[in-house]
Length: 324
Image 1 (spheres, rainbow, N blue to C red):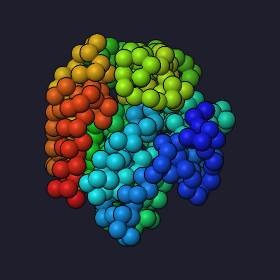
Image 2: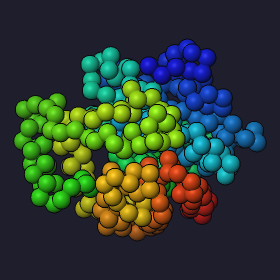
Image 3: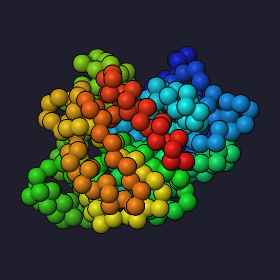
């Protein structure tokens, strides 16, 4: 279990408490139906820097088997005058322990739609702080969940920023069809059946203990092959098909991708998803979609080596200023 800087474990409850990211960061538990929890994180100095709530708040949503460990993103948003928040969805990161204690599989909900409840709770908490505009900034699987949530819950978000969103399964078309059919057949009978494993090369390339520059908890962002369970994958494929039909979002959307997909160049390209899929499907989200390519960006553009990381953050900040 991840600890705070003083070596103690984070406390639970509805009150804000010091977060594991250290000085300037706080977290609180969001209690959800069915005894589930999510965790809201805030960069406290950015919430009301002049004594009044910042006009624009940005809520960061992570990807699969991931959590918020990006203080540099929060500080970049704060420097632009935005209040910076993040949510660890149920079963992920800071919300892992309660999920596992209830006997659920961390990181993989059988139905992705339940994360709409997590996002509702996070958005409500952020809005309650008095911010006028809410931008939701989502990565990878979060970039699949969030547009569907925004479509089903109009008015919850004022704009979306999608960082390498998982719009389509990264595989040749025949493999996509076969894997989807397998998930549909197996999930009703054995929802927890393992259909395959996600490769561990990308997270290892990120971690400081290997070739990367980032220090994150491998219990929460695994450094070994990760099982893909049938019900979860069925829900992913259904969600992707729904999104591909078009969402008619009435809010501005920014989609950012790397300039290329490769198999092994983890630090300078997207080795997890096909950027071509993202570019093809992005215009179907709505009438106000901007598409930006970050040269030399990795899958999580926010973790890319310099200068791609700084370019990504600057593009995001400039776009938010213009959009909301």
